[in-house]
Length: 244
Image (cartoon, rainbow, N blue to C red; front, side, top):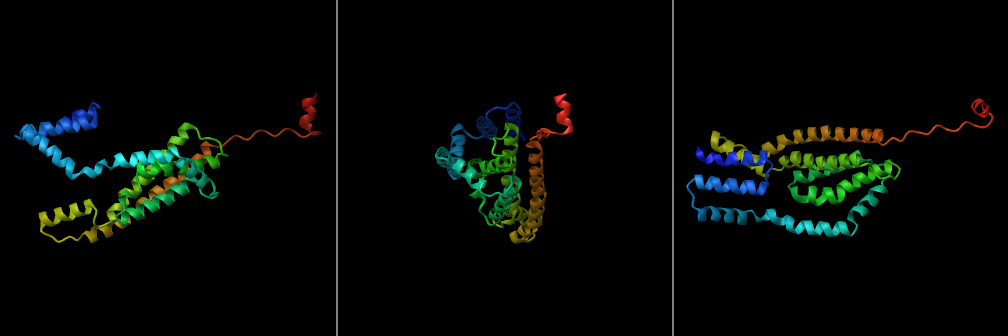
């Protein structure tokens, strides 16, 4: 039971807003020492864990590539492209991306999108470009720009979260089937869980899609420019009154 004090270290570290990497590292060391591991054993466990999951460091390659693309005008080209689609609003564009994200995640392509790979360099600028077109080509206020960006990231997250469960080889599906089959002695097929996830994904698409359509109405209302009062025509009663 005393080994669980490592969890307390994680809770305290996150509650005090410490560096997450430092908190997790200290929690691992504390847990290992309380579990009777030697310092060399803890270091070996850290090294083995890093070697077995070194794919998480792939961002060290993707981030420079994305930076080079942005420096050479990727975001500007994305804005130009979305500006040519006159009937495509911010909400409609994000609904299309939501559907694409769900479909690709449902067939196992979880890494084809993401906040770093697609949302920041392409999806968010294209959504902002659609909003700027409805704003008469004028730049968006910072508050509205952040709102568009947050909805872009939410579309990616919702599409991935509810789409990946429709893929029968995803980790969550395999975890559930493995636990149920071993704990209860049943034979639950991953395909059964994947099929039952389809109605949930459809409901998530409808709910979030309605939020995106409401976003269009919100942007139209917040970006509305009050019309100027037209000047009275010569010879009218108002002009004669002004002349007096």
